[in-house]
Image (cartoon, rainbow over all chains, first blue to last red; front, side, top):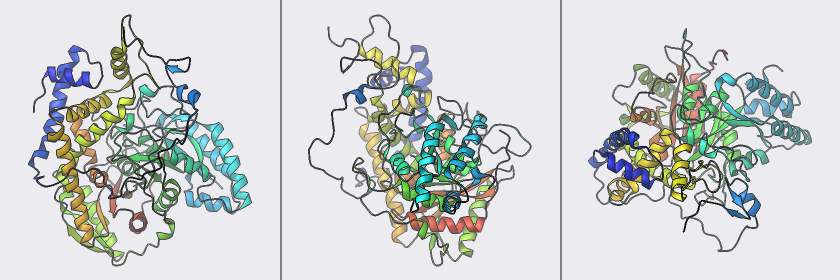
Length: 95
Length: 495
């Protein structure tokens, strides 16, 4: 499958990665090569095979639905690029 | 005692218990070796103060008697592990300045057992790569060189710094992680032992996530015994990782009897790939002969879906990565791009991620986004998961037929030159994992053991694949192979 420049632009947008216009054709070519490689999977007969959800047959563990920690505001904000008054700060989202 | 840095974990443990040396002495020797080895690019954050304090505490425990096996052993820690208060940035610019407020389960267990942290080790960015050339820190370099040639070689990837550091005797052992071969391929490229445990054996908590259904941490060590000792300290049930197995941890070292009489070793015909170098074929045949001489039964087997492992991996791993790496948004930790006037939150995300992620990481995040997007999810992602189920069934079948372990080459070649693959298309680089990636897809334990030297003087390794949860048995076969191969070569110091 060949990926065109518009599709590359759309994927970059979905992934929230800024890609300059002049870089899109090369990116589209790379995607096409990788997807071409992946298309080999179409040769495999997967009729009746369930998609794998867990590689080991174990059930996921459950625990009681209770609070197990908390009160760590300072630790949680410690690495934030911009934290103010106990919150993560971001550019204005709504007008 | 001389050459303290060359000690194995077992050798150091016994020497410290006998009072022949101390953790402080070995740790100091390692710190000195690290100071002189910047040319290898292995240690990217050095932690000598932490090391000195941990070594002093370990020496008190050892003197008191009853110290665990890992007590006082100086280690390197891959940069993918979160270590409290110490930079942990997965070799990415996007985590620049990140100092975790918590400690990964694996490093917690190692430090509780008395192990000493010398520093953080180089790797491919977010563990995506097979040559350690995608790191924000620059390349890690292989301590081995081709005979009569000064060209810098790759130590493999993604655990390239771990491989380089252990092979160059900068530390006694190191942690690695393996999503498609990232412990076993670098181990083979530098002539050391690297073990990827069964999926679920080692907690993933606190390890920066790449592809959660494939990632597994493991030891990178100077020999098989050390892998057994270090694995025991790393694994065990962790309530903080819902995929962590709640099963007993055996004494893996006690499994090393070297007796493999009657064990059935499978040789999968599909691993004889087109264009495989003659040397690799010979190495493989020699390994099979060694195991046969040791009393094993060699059996030809078939794993018919092998060919589809790499394409399935390059759907599943990027898909999981695109989801895992969504958290790097410039809000909670790490890098945030400088914004222009009028930029909103979307521009902040897009610029931050464009500046913070390197080219390979961006490529994989976008491929993952594409295969998960509406209209393609079934065609790519679900199909790949179905193929993955078939790949696992291949292994289930041969194990049910009585095969105890499977022997394959670890890599399709010896270490290549840094920069040699720069202009190759990404798929050429992906082919490095052709022998290892099946093991991650099937969740099995696999180990790389050095068994030979190529015509250029570089180490080559073989891989053994075991039954799920039977790392003890696998390590014992690896131990027999190691003894038979008698690999003792070391790189000549040039750094």
